[in-house]
Length: 205
Length: 205
Image 1 (cartoon, each protein chain N blue to C red):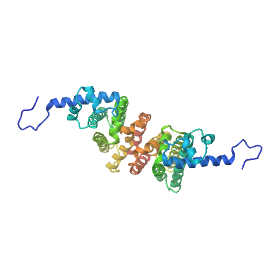
Image 2: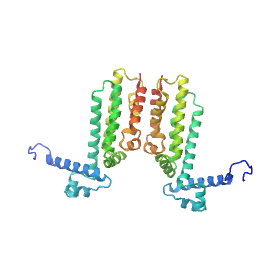
Image 3: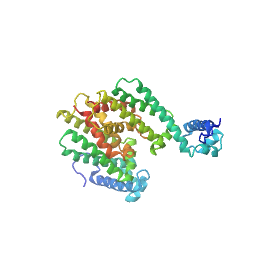
Image 4: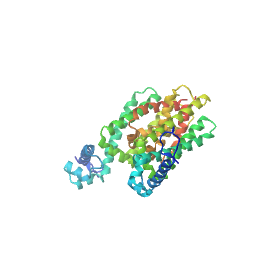
């Protein structure tokens, strides 16, 4: 349905939104099967039954489609993190669960669907805006948990917040960055536990 | 000169040793120019002026030559670490300098000679025995410095030594593993300082 209000800005309306969603869903399936690198926009167009020109009406490039898929995946991981944190009783426990959920989410979403991992690796090596946003979200969450722990007296308050946040992010980075996780998969579960404990020792008052 | 003692085991003698050294030196130069992956033993033989068969008398494979080069490079890095540690007044300072020297050594030796980095990456992805030995040396050095700090009262003693050692190794790993360092080069110097401080906070009594 088109909007009829005279004050509304020009809009492609909900049907365009649906077409975008349809393209992204078809692309997710196609990339998941054949890989992101190996698929062209022509391949995609053929699969969906659209013309290539029609797809370019909605997305500037293959990367623009990959960006949406990547952003969707990363936001699913962050949802998992939010759920893991929701009932954690202390800041220490929140930090531990956060790290665990990030690694679990990354492992599941990117490595159980190997072909889609292409996208994550391409996105992280750029890095694409979706990955930058993801990193920012993680940093903000780390800062927030540290602040909570400082207020509750669980964590020390001498080290500048920026420095502590950044250092903890650096410890987590090899396991939460989509590009780096592939080199650390074997270690990921064991490492998450041991590194969480080390981080918590570093935060002790 | 051949050994003439009747009790000595059969030996190829020093001249064989010299040939090995000659092959390794020529290979280091050749790999440094053309890359390890792209060079064949035939290429090497041509450059040195030996027959391929003669080279195979001394090394089973290209990898066997690469192994020696890699081991030489890694042992140069460890020498740099030893020098950096020799005059450090405290265990904390030793830990900080150790991390710094490992990262500096890795960056210099593998990245200022880009083509030789091929070898390091191939060696780390295996991993080759030379890289395993290197990792063991780093772990042992970490454990030793922690013990010194525990004895001097600088570091806490509650956490099992194995756990502390392994967790600290995991924090250092993205910057000291030859395969991983390439993805962390931009960050390496800043990260080394911030992560050293985090590690030292985690070791506080």
